[in-house]
Amino acid sequence: MKRYLLFLPFIFVLAACKHNIVSKYPGYSTKNNTDYFKYTDLGSNKRTARAGDVMEVIISYSKMNDSVFWDSRNNGFPFAVYLPYDTLKEGGSYQKVLMSGNEGDSINLIVPTQEVFRQILHLTVPYFLQKNEMMKVNTRIVSIMDAGQFAEKEKKIREFRKDMDIQEQLSLLQYVNVNNIPQSTKQDNVYFLAEKDGNGPEVKDRSTVSIAYRGYFLNGHTFDSVSPNNPLQFRLGDTAQVITGLEIGIKRMREGEKAKIIIPSQLAFGENGSSTGIVPPYTSVIYEVTMLKVNDPGK
Image (cartoon, rainbow, N blue to C red; front, top):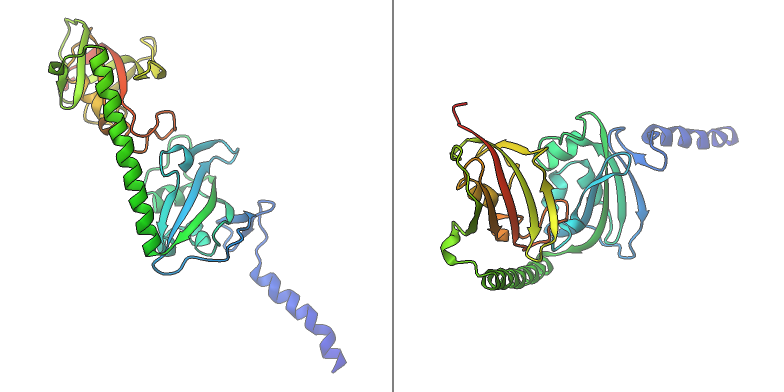
């Protein structure tokens, strides 16, 4: 009997080794040698997500060199992502890891870019990432809510956004009045002020245009600019390179013309602001555009 007992510890060790996969990323664990995770903080609340619950999560995406290219905290109110239980259950592997996390946990993951962009976001992998490379997903589970709690949260979000929308409208109206901008310049909810005439071809649907511009807020602070030496070129209606309001204004221009285009947030960066976080939510913007070149659709 003693002889068999001596071998039992070795049997348990061998069984454990069969279920644990050695991770190639120090400090990270893995269950499938494809996705890797580690807990950087443990919440004091031991509640996990159950059927019908919604998880409120702060998420950031970064390259393997820790260069962050998207962060929910910079993407406008409410600064978090809401994931229903069914989404967690049926989602990609990092979402399944979240499903086993507790309220207050911080979990960092290393996952394939294709999994995040194609399976979860249903987007094409961006140009600055390779399809076969890995990326980092850092998460913090802010709260886990049942249906009633989430409904109350949504109500507060709607009220907050309504207040922000009203404030934006008042700010835009004040700017228009102070600068004596006539309502006749407003068309399709965009103010268009010609500053310099052009004598070249008119912009048409699906024209290819080259523009220089300065984008700034109502207070005059510049948030984006493109110089004539390195213009932005695109085809109207065939790309998402410019916001809707800017495209509306550009369609009223011709080659050589310069114009000021005032755009409310509904036709600019919306209720979430820009993806970079530079333009806040519910913010009207102004573009001073110089139309450098217009090519007919046929060409």
